[in-house]
Length: 220
Ligand code: GRF
Image 1 (tube, protein in one colour):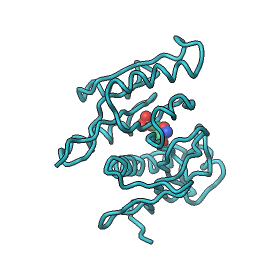
Image 2 (tube, rainbow, N blue to C red):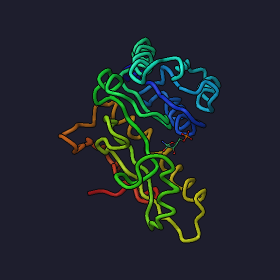
Image 3 (cartoon, rainbow, N blue to C red):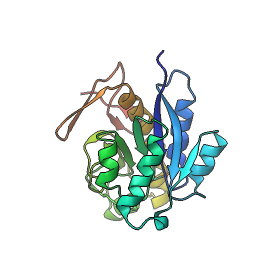
Image 4 (cartoon, helix red, strand yellow):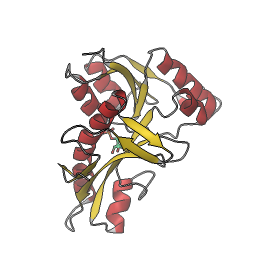
């Protein structure tokens, strides 16, 4: 097997998606390794999880830079030092600028807890719950200069039950996030994802799907 592809995970929060990636990368057969976890919040759960896993960490504080562009330039400089080929935003609560995107063109992935383009932005699960959707879910997409607006790689849908609290729905979606994100990272580092404008094509293997309904792969 080839050497695992070095990737970075950028996160601001508790890091359960990072943990799913750490667990996936702990399989020697998984084609990626996390070279660095970078956060804008040095005391975040994500940083703690990385340290527990023996993964190198970097913290870049927005307040130490006069502009978003200079903050992103420092972030890029830190990431490049680790030779990463892909960047995964796993609960990164900042919009990235063209400085970041130009450094990693079509190489930045994001996980969002809604079926985009519905409910972009913060608290997507609560937005969906308040709207009264019957089907909710999560999306892995390429990051572009917009907010949760890049080309979609894969989506997982789950039922939204009338009896659900926001927390119930959030947990049901999160369970699918933890499956979808490592799957999409595998496809990315195996160069199985191609972009045609906004349309994403994935060279799927046997039994694989980029459309998941309540944990089951949908083919077609
Ligand atoms: C996840 O719901 C993810 O979809 C969103 O931010 C949340 C991060 O959760 N972008 P965690 O820090 O991975 O637990």
